[in-house]
Image 1 (spheres, rainbow, N blue to C red):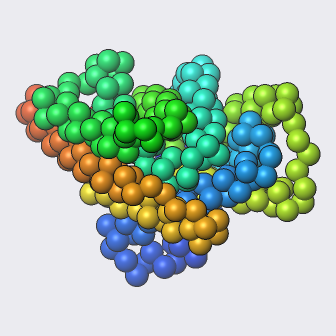
Image 2 (spheres, rainbow, N blue to C red; image 1 turned 120 degrees about the horizontal axis):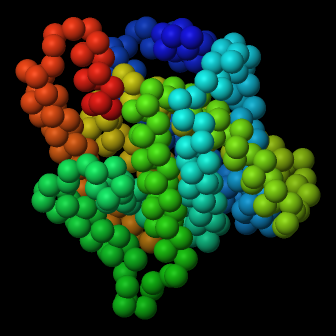
Length: 334
Protein backbone atom coordinates (compact mmCIF):
# COMPACT_ATOMS: atom_id res chain seq x y z
CA UNK A 1 0.00 0.00 0.00
CA UNK A 2 1.29 3.46 -0.88
CA UNK A 3 1.73 6.23 1.69
CA UNK A 4 -0.97 8.25 -0.13
CA UNK A 5 -3.48 5.39 0.12
CA UNK A 6 -2.72 4.90 3.81
CA UNK A 7 -3.11 8.63 4.45
CA UNK A 8 -6.56 8.43 2.83
CA UNK A 9 -7.55 5.61 5.21
CA UNK A 10 -6.34 7.59 8.23
CA UNK A 11 -8.25 10.68 7.21
CA UNK A 12 -11.47 8.68 6.84
CA UNK A 13 -11.31 8.08 10.59
CA UNK A 14 -11.37 11.87 11.12
CA UNK A 15 -14.07 12.98 8.64
CA UNK A 16 -15.32 16.00 10.66
CA UNK A 17 -11.74 17.25 11.03
CA UNK A 18 -10.86 16.71 7.38
CA UNK A 19 -14.00 18.47 6.17
CA UNK A 20 -13.23 21.48 8.33
CA UNK A 21 -9.62 21.33 7.15
CA UNK A 22 -10.66 22.11 3.57
CA UNK A 23 -11.34 25.68 4.74
CA UNK A 24 -7.81 26.09 6.13
CA UNK A 25 -4.29 26.34 4.79
CA UNK A 26 -1.98 23.38 5.55
CA UNK A 27 -0.22 25.43 8.22
CA UNK A 28 -3.48 26.30 9.98
CA UNK A 29 -4.55 22.66 9.75
CA UNK A 30 -1.30 21.68 11.46
CA UNK A 31 -1.75 24.26 14.23
CA UNK A 32 -5.34 23.11 14.80
CA UNK A 33 -4.22 19.48 15.04
CA UNK A 34 -1.46 20.32 17.55
CA UNK A 35 -3.91 22.29 19.71
CA UNK A 36 -6.36 19.37 19.55
CA UNK A 37 -3.53 17.03 20.52
CA UNK A 38 -2.70 19.22 23.53
CA UNK A 39 -6.38 19.22 24.53
CA UNK A 40 -6.72 15.43 24.22
CA UNK A 41 -3.50 14.95 26.17
CA UNK A 42 -4.75 17.22 28.97
CA UNK A 43 -8.09 15.42 29.25
CA UNK A 44 -6.20 12.12 29.47
CA UNK A 45 -3.99 13.37 32.32
CA UNK A 46 -6.89 14.69 34.39
CA UNK A 47 -8.72 11.38 33.94
CA UNK A 48 -5.54 9.54 35.03
CA UNK A 49 -5.42 11.70 38.16
CA UNK A 50 -9.03 10.80 38.99
CA UNK A 51 -8.77 7.02 38.55
CA UNK A 52 -5.36 6.67 40.24
CA UNK A 53 -6.58 8.70 43.22
CA UNK A 54 -9.54 6.30 43.29
CA UNK A 55 -7.22 3.35 44.04
CA UNK A 56 -6.86 1.93 40.52
CA UNK A 57 -3.18 0.82 40.21
CA UNK A 58 -1.00 2.66 37.68
CA UNK A 59 -0.13 -0.59 35.84
CA UNK A 60 -3.84 -1.24 35.36
CA UNK A 61 -4.46 2.28 34.03
CA UNK A 62 -1.60 1.88 31.55
CA UNK A 63 -2.96 -1.51 30.46
CA UNK A 64 -6.43 -0.15 29.75
CA UNK A 65 -4.95 2.91 28.04
CA UNK A 66 -3.09 0.57 25.68
CA UNK A 67 -6.13 -1.67 25.15
CA UNK A 68 -8.64 1.07 24.35
CA UNK A 69 -6.04 2.95 22.33
CA UNK A 70 -5.48 -0.18 20.25
CA UNK A 71 -9.23 -0.62 19.74
CA UNK A 72 -9.40 2.91 18.31
CA UNK A 73 -7.00 1.77 15.56
CA UNK A 74 -8.89 -1.43 14.66
CA UNK A 75 -10.96 0.35 11.93
CA UNK A 76 -7.65 1.45 10.39
CA UNK A 77 -6.37 -2.15 10.57
CA UNK A 78 -9.59 -3.39 8.96
CA UNK A 79 -9.08 -1.03 6.02
CA UNK A 80 -5.35 -1.51 5.41
CA UNK A 81 -5.11 -5.26 6.07
CA UNK A 82 -1.61 -6.76 5.93
CA UNK A 83 -0.07 -3.31 5.50
CA UNK A 84 -0.45 -2.97 9.30
CA UNK A 85 2.25 -5.62 9.82
CA UNK A 86 4.69 -4.85 7.01
CA UNK A 87 7.18 -3.00 9.19
CA UNK A 88 10.78 -2.64 7.99
CA UNK A 89 12.18 -3.40 11.46
CA UNK A 90 10.06 -5.92 13.42
CA UNK A 91 12.74 -6.83 15.98
CA UNK A 92 13.44 -3.19 16.81
CA UNK A 93 9.94 -2.91 18.27
CA UNK A 94 11.05 -4.95 21.29
CA UNK A 95 13.24 -2.02 22.35
CA UNK A 96 10.81 0.67 21.17
CA UNK A 97 7.86 -0.87 23.05
CA UNK A 98 9.93 -1.51 26.19
CA UNK A 99 11.17 2.07 26.62
CA UNK A 100 7.77 3.42 25.60
CA UNK A 101 6.04 1.28 28.22
CA UNK A 102 8.49 2.39 30.93
CA UNK A 103 7.95 6.02 29.97
CA UNK A 104 4.17 5.67 30.06
CA UNK A 105 4.17 3.91 33.45
CA UNK A 106 6.42 6.59 34.96
CA UNK A 107 4.38 9.43 33.44
CA UNK A 108 1.08 8.02 34.70
CA UNK A 109 2.66 7.44 38.12
CA UNK A 110 3.86 11.06 38.22
CA UNK A 111 0.31 12.29 37.54
CA UNK A 112 -0.83 10.24 40.53
CA UNK A 113 1.89 11.65 42.81
CA UNK A 114 1.90 15.29 41.68
CA UNK A 115 -0.49 17.94 40.43
CA UNK A 116 -1.09 17.09 36.74
CA UNK A 117 0.27 20.49 35.63
CA UNK A 118 3.48 19.96 37.61
CA UNK A 119 3.94 16.48 36.14
CA UNK A 120 3.36 17.82 32.61
CA UNK A 121 5.72 20.78 33.14
CA UNK A 122 8.56 18.57 34.35
CA UNK A 123 7.90 16.18 31.48
CA UNK A 124 8.64 19.09 29.12
CA UNK A 125 12.29 18.10 29.62
CA UNK A 126 11.75 15.40 26.99
CA UNK A 127 13.30 17.44 24.10
CA UNK A 128 16.34 18.12 26.28
CA UNK A 129 16.92 14.40 26.82
CA UNK A 130 16.28 13.86 23.11
CA UNK A 131 19.20 16.17 22.29
CA UNK A 132 21.50 14.21 24.62
CA UNK A 133 20.29 10.87 23.23
CA UNK A 134 20.62 12.01 19.61
CA UNK A 135 24.25 12.96 20.27
CA UNK A 136 25.28 9.77 22.06
CA UNK A 137 23.13 7.14 20.32
CA UNK A 138 22.27 8.48 16.85
CA UNK A 139 25.60 10.21 16.28
CA UNK A 140 23.99 13.57 15.50
CA UNK A 141 26.16 16.67 15.69
CA UNK A 142 25.14 19.00 18.53
CA UNK A 143 26.69 22.47 18.50
CA UNK A 144 27.44 24.72 21.49
CA UNK A 145 24.20 26.68 21.03
CA UNK A 146 22.03 23.60 21.35
CA UNK A 147 24.05 22.45 24.37
CA UNK A 148 23.56 25.93 25.86
CA UNK A 149 19.81 25.81 25.23
CA UNK A 150 19.70 22.37 26.85
CA UNK A 151 21.48 23.77 29.93
CA UNK A 152 18.95 26.63 30.11
CA UNK A 153 16.14 24.06 29.98
CA UNK A 154 17.56 22.17 32.93
CA UNK A 155 17.86 25.49 34.79
CA UNK A 156 14.10 25.71 34.36
CA UNK A 157 13.85 22.27 35.98
CA UNK A 158 15.81 23.54 39.00
CA UNK A 159 13.47 26.51 39.30
CA UNK A 160 10.48 24.17 39.44
CA UNK A 161 12.08 21.66 41.79
CA UNK A 162 13.42 24.32 44.21
CA UNK A 163 16.14 22.02 45.64
CA UNK A 164 17.37 23.15 49.04
CA UNK A 165 14.35 25.37 49.63
CA UNK A 166 12.57 22.88 51.89
CA UNK A 167 9.81 22.36 49.30
CA UNK A 168 11.48 19.72 47.14
CA UNK A 169 9.40 16.60 46.54
CA UNK A 170 11.22 13.36 45.67
CA UNK A 171 8.19 12.47 43.54
CA UNK A 172 9.18 15.29 41.17
CA UNK A 173 12.00 13.09 39.88
CA UNK A 174 9.45 10.62 38.41
CA UNK A 175 8.23 12.80 35.46
CA UNK A 176 11.86 13.64 34.66
CA UNK A 177 12.70 9.92 34.48
CA UNK A 178 9.56 9.50 32.37
CA UNK A 179 10.83 12.20 30.00
CA UNK A 180 14.16 10.38 29.63
CA UNK A 181 12.41 7.09 28.78
CA UNK A 182 9.99 8.81 26.41
CA UNK A 183 12.91 10.56 24.71
CA UNK A 184 14.41 7.12 24.07
CA UNK A 185 11.08 6.02 22.59
CA UNK A 186 10.97 9.11 20.34
CA UNK A 187 14.52 8.50 19.14
CA UNK A 188 13.44 4.93 18.38
CA UNK A 189 10.53 6.23 16.30
CA UNK A 190 12.91 8.62 14.55
CA UNK A 191 15.10 5.65 13.66
CA UNK A 192 12.06 3.75 12.37
CA UNK A 193 10.91 6.66 10.19
CA UNK A 194 14.38 6.80 8.66
CA UNK A 195 13.80 3.19 7.66
CA UNK A 196 10.50 4.16 6.02
CA UNK A 197 8.07 3.19 8.80
CA UNK A 198 4.50 4.51 8.65
CA UNK A 199 3.58 6.61 11.77
CA UNK A 200 0.15 5.02 12.33
CA UNK A 201 1.56 1.53 11.86
CA UNK A 202 4.23 2.36 14.45
CA UNK A 203 1.49 3.23 16.98
CA UNK A 204 -0.49 0.11 16.07
CA UNK A 205 2.39 -2.37 16.39
CA UNK A 206 3.55 -0.75 19.61
CA UNK A 207 0.03 -1.24 20.99
CA UNK A 208 -0.04 -4.89 19.94
CA UNK A 209 3.15 -5.52 21.91
CA UNK A 210 2.54 -3.26 24.91
CA UNK A 211 -1.06 -4.24 25.66
CA UNK A 212 -0.46 -7.89 26.70
CA UNK A 213 2.74 -6.91 28.52
CA UNK A 214 1.03 -4.25 30.62
CA UNK A 215 -1.97 -6.48 31.37
CA UNK A 216 0.50 -9.10 32.63
CA UNK A 217 1.97 -6.53 35.02
CA UNK A 218 -1.48 -5.25 35.98
CA UNK A 219 -2.56 -8.78 36.94
CA UNK A 220 -0.09 -8.64 39.85
CA UNK A 221 -1.92 -5.67 41.46
CA UNK A 222 -5.37 -6.03 39.91
CA UNK A 223 -8.33 -4.09 41.32
CA UNK A 224 -11.68 -4.70 39.64
CA UNK A 225 -12.82 -1.31 38.27
CA UNK A 226 -16.40 -0.13 38.65
CA UNK A 227 -18.42 0.76 35.55
CA UNK A 228 -17.71 4.45 36.15
CA UNK A 229 -14.00 3.78 36.44
CA UNK A 230 -14.09 1.60 33.33
CA UNK A 231 -15.67 4.49 31.44
CA UNK A 232 -12.86 6.80 32.58
CA UNK A 233 -10.27 4.20 31.55
CA UNK A 234 -11.90 4.08 28.12
CA UNK A 235 -11.67 7.88 27.85
CA UNK A 236 -7.98 7.71 28.80
CA UNK A 237 -7.26 5.20 26.03
CA UNK A 238 -9.22 7.10 23.38
CA UNK A 239 -7.79 10.50 24.33
CA UNK A 240 -4.22 9.17 24.41
CA UNK A 241 -4.49 7.63 20.95
CA UNK A 242 -6.23 10.67 19.44
CA UNK A 243 -3.53 12.91 20.92
CA UNK A 244 -0.81 10.77 19.36
CA UNK A 245 -2.43 10.57 15.91
CA UNK A 246 -3.39 14.25 15.63
CA UNK A 247 0.13 15.20 16.75
CA UNK A 248 1.65 12.95 14.06
CA UNK A 249 -0.71 14.28 11.37
CA UNK A 250 0.19 17.86 12.29
CA UNK A 251 3.90 17.29 11.87
CA UNK A 252 3.25 15.94 8.37
CA UNK A 253 1.72 19.27 7.39
CA UNK A 254 4.13 21.83 8.88
CA UNK A 255 7.63 22.28 10.25
CA UNK A 256 8.25 20.94 13.77
CA UNK A 257 10.13 24.12 14.73
CA UNK A 258 6.97 26.12 13.99
CA UNK A 259 4.54 23.79 15.76
CA UNK A 260 6.42 22.94 18.94
CA UNK A 261 5.40 26.19 20.65
CA UNK A 262 1.72 25.31 20.30
CA UNK A 263 2.33 21.91 21.91
CA UNK A 264 3.17 23.69 25.18
CA UNK A 265 -0.50 24.65 25.45
CA UNK A 266 -0.73 21.33 27.31
CA UNK A 267 0.35 23.16 30.47
CA UNK A 268 -2.40 25.81 30.69
CA UNK A 269 -4.96 23.30 29.40
CA UNK A 270 -4.20 20.71 32.08
CA UNK A 271 -3.87 23.38 34.81
CA UNK A 272 -7.31 24.79 33.98
CA UNK A 273 -8.91 21.34 33.73
CA UNK A 274 -7.38 20.17 37.02
CA UNK A 275 -8.68 23.30 38.73
CA UNK A 276 -12.17 23.03 37.17
CA UNK A 277 -12.60 19.29 37.78
CA UNK A 278 -10.50 18.63 40.88
CA UNK A 279 -10.07 22.07 42.46
CA UNK A 280 -6.28 21.59 42.49
CA UNK A 281 -3.87 24.52 42.06
CA UNK A 282 -0.21 23.96 41.05
CA UNK A 283 2.73 25.72 42.67
CA UNK A 284 3.61 29.13 41.27
CA UNK A 285 7.13 28.01 40.36
CA UNK A 286 5.99 25.81 37.49
CA UNK A 287 5.27 28.83 35.28
CA UNK A 288 8.75 30.45 35.11
CA UNK A 289 10.42 27.03 35.13
CA UNK A 290 8.23 25.63 32.37
CA UNK A 291 8.68 28.87 30.44
CA UNK A 292 12.45 28.42 30.40
CA UNK A 293 12.12 24.78 29.33
CA UNK A 294 9.67 25.72 26.56
CA UNK A 295 11.89 28.52 25.24
CA UNK A 296 14.97 26.28 25.24
CA UNK A 297 13.05 23.51 23.43
CA UNK A 298 11.73 25.91 20.81
CA UNK A 299 15.25 27.22 20.24
CA UNK A 300 16.59 23.66 19.93
CA UNK A 301 13.89 22.91 17.32
CA UNK A 302 14.88 26.03 15.36
CA UNK A 303 18.55 25.03 15.43
CA UNK A 304 17.69 21.49 14.28
CA UNK A 305 15.66 22.94 11.41
CA UNK A 306 18.58 25.12 10.37
CA UNK A 307 21.02 22.20 10.63
CA UNK A 308 18.82 20.02 8.43
CA UNK A 309 18.52 22.72 5.78
CA UNK A 310 22.27 23.32 5.79
CA UNK A 311 22.93 19.57 5.47
CA UNK A 312 20.52 19.29 2.54
CA UNK A 313 22.02 22.35 0.82
CA UNK A 314 25.54 20.99 1.32
CA UNK A 315 24.65 17.55 -0.05
CA UNK A 316 22.56 18.80 -2.99
CA UNK A 317 25.45 19.61 -5.42
CA UNK A 318 26.93 16.15 -4.94
CA UNK A 319 23.68 14.35 -5.76
CA UNK A 320 22.27 13.79 -9.27
CA UNK A 321 19.13 15.76 -10.00
CA UNK A 322 16.84 12.74 -10.21
CA UNK A 323 13.57 11.86 -8.45
CA UNK A 324 15.41 9.10 -6.55
CA UNK A 325 17.95 11.57 -5.16
CA UNK A 326 15.22 13.95 -4.06
CA UNK A 327 13.41 11.14 -2.30
CA UNK A 328 16.61 10.17 -0.52
CA UNK A 329 17.18 13.76 0.65
CA UNK A 330 13.69 14.00 2.05
CA UNK A 331 14.01 10.71 3.88
CA UNK A 332 17.29 11.73 5.47
CA UNK A 333 15.96 15.15 6.45
CA UNK A 334 13.32 13.63 8.67
